[in-house]
Image 1 (cartoon, helix red, strand yellow):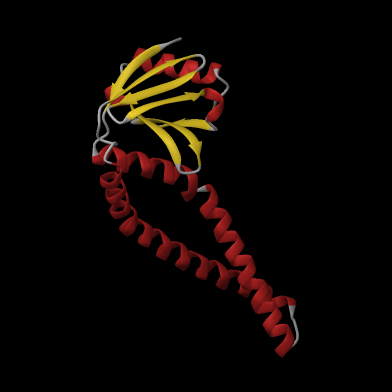
Image 2 (cartoon, helix red, strand yellow):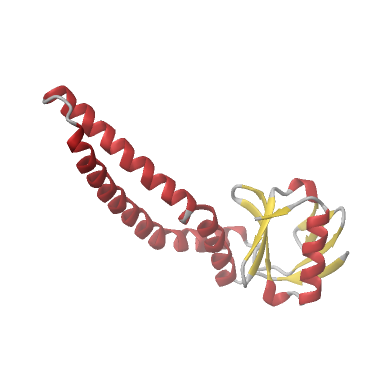
Length: 177
């Protein structure tokens, strides 16, 4: 279980990989949790305000929960729309600032870790430095921290090398999520 491969991320691949990770990180699980929290907080606040002003009646609890859910959905739509507009622009700037993202990078891996080298320098990461890895049909993403990860575009690496890389990572103790 060792191998080498070389990649060079284009701007589109870089942005797509970040979108994949952001969707995996946020959109479904955490967005649902946020919607529930906003709904409940709104209902509790309205019950407290009405309780002080008019006295609390349990019949209005359902109305407050419905109103809270509507406001939570409006908030979600605004946040998602804002993200859809701003994130690609921020990622293009980040890609340009990195200047190393589009450089050809050679990776070597074995059961002990993942090493990379390009004209800017080398990195040696043991598998226990990674938290987990995720994948979709286009990318393998090895996550070091919340916003630090190694992107491997599947289109640039042979399928057998990808399989060996996944096996080495799993043997090294990284879980796939």
